[in-house]
Length: 611
Ligand code: AGP
Image (cartoon, rainbow, N blue to C red; front, side, top):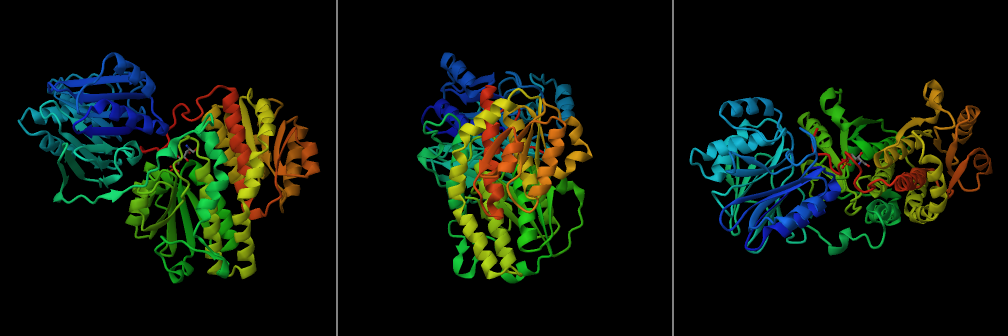
């Protein structure tokens, strides 16, 4: 989603800002811009709709000189993606430039008020009011820090802000309320970013801003204040950064690279978490004793998108292994639903990015109601990771493709281990625990084998690429796998796709079935296999085209399917982990055939930081 990069120091800002924006590109955006203060204290602003490459092109013709500046990638909320709506926005005819992540909910009232004062708006954004409000304070001879501080209480909604002004060259202001912002500490220079990955090549010393904090940075100074509590000493953390984290290494897309990383993802998610001698799992950061966990009567998972589908798999596994009732809630709904939760309910949120606004909102709501909140998160140091009472990291490494793949695998592994851990605290036997652990630890091999069916998936993709709509079906734990397959396909190919329990078809969706609407059926061998086979017959009777993901050697399924995608015969607990791989590859190849922008699909963002 929107990204911010700021810099102040003693070297040219433009290349640092551009490189930072490039590192944030994977988050999804539709325009980009920079604003710098040049050596003659003039404000230089360059903005372009489209990719960072378009901005780069503009800067190659009209550079933005200066050693202090801000930059932004915008994901449109208020007003379409065009040059005028791109950030930074200018306040008071060149007095100040502002880049903003988040949404200002009272922008319409503020716009009216500023219009009455004579301000002329150039854009349709909510952000421009911030720029004019600051300009108005600067007219009162306030310094830039005080001017920003003065207007913040007037903003309703969420913001991560970066501000520069020609009246104070070399000064960079940041402010945070609900939208992440981090300061990078360099040698005689400072950075500001919405995501530490944007500045990680320059410094690994960072200070995360908290809500209500405002920062003033110059090349040598770092002053932090809380809007109510005044001056504070920043807490500096170190981030892990490996220079090769983001190399494609010859693979054409990050999504494909990340699909292929999944055998390793499983190993990394298991590392240090298995206690074979006790046939159970262990988690360092849960911060809840076994005695407390034994008392849990109900678990609620709140998440969005792919993380929600992983949570649904967790629901089946935990209910099966530990017999604890689990409910999975859309995070964006949970927050406002006022669902009854008793004091023995444990609330988990799941998020790859750790920054999803809906999921963060669910976490805060659960905490407000006095529940211990736990998070299953990939991004170390993210807001959700920092705000949860305890949690489990996925250790999946940076995921760049907007379509989540390896993070899903890591979530499913962590949830499987959690199911075993909770099960072993109750009635799961040593033998059953050990069998489940063995299955999870053995998963990299069948995953590797499944990746090798990619040529067959290409054939399936050719059957699907011209369809207007595709149905994804599965029973039991394969229903969330079907949901995930449908989400992957619609995200990156833009083909309409829906996931259903195979049993539900006859209650309505079967009306859609015809030779032009392929059905992808997830049907590995298992207790409900015969039922799914009957559902396939029902589809075939309506001339449905069947793409089946099934157990290798399942001749009966192979005979009934138009395209058969075999996966190895694996224990039930890891079937979802393996069965989702052909669906990820299917979405990838359909999108490839259609020439889509696979890693940066239209309208989507990697981390959705608005509600
Ligand atoms: C996944 O392919 C999607 N891009 C999206 O549904 C995503 O899973 C969702 O926005 C939640 O993100 P999170 O896991 O970072 O919270």
